[in-house]
Image (cartoon, rainbow, N blue to C red; front, side, top):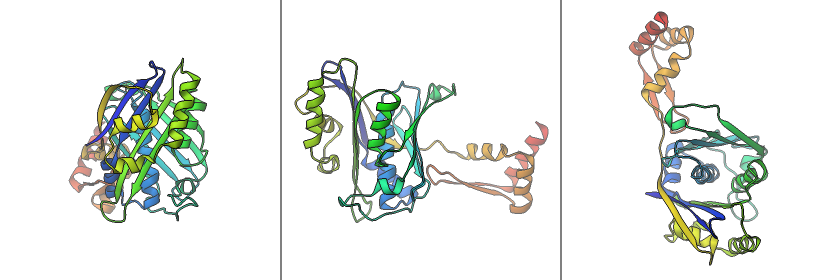
Length: 298
């Protein structure tokens, strides 16, 4: 099972969140049949949403969304407080050759656009308050850079974000995936910040140590170096969707009488595919008739 931990360092002036999400990203690849570049892009975004979502209250939902003009066109990743993640890319087969460093050209696939963070307070309690939506222009499209820029610009929290997805040539393709979020809280010592920056600059790639068996606590120590880390909590991380047959029927019902009647008369049924998990839901002719009856009597 994939894991995420959170804690503090340097007398509670540094927040650290670290996660290993290899199995979660692997399931994303399986469900969406993503290209390698799309896998790296969505995998990084899912991990970023998990890391940032861990800084929220227990009943909040967090979504990271990119709207862009690159081949991938857009990305959505959602993190719930129980560790459940889901997401999709608009063009799952979008792919590009490796960049000049021999790595996935996620920035080229994303292109220019806007990076959004959406926080929904009390969502898991059914409160459905008006969400807080923050946004910044996409800087590099590499996801980690953009998340760090968002936190510095929109939420005024200096942060370092490391996200990584490593693929291999044979199924199940995902060799390693994970990330670390380091945030400077009020009172953070400049010397400590410099130490962390230097440690990160000289640290091995996250995916290489994850591939060697490193867990979230190892990743936290990797970026902190000699600075002591205090773990405050952990949670399992997994891919999980909230779609269902009932929700599919509700969405069709929301279309109204004319559209439902058209489905019934022309298609004798309906089919819906969830964009988050690729599950397919069939709505029979009889179910459409029942929907029409409910609409007529409402």
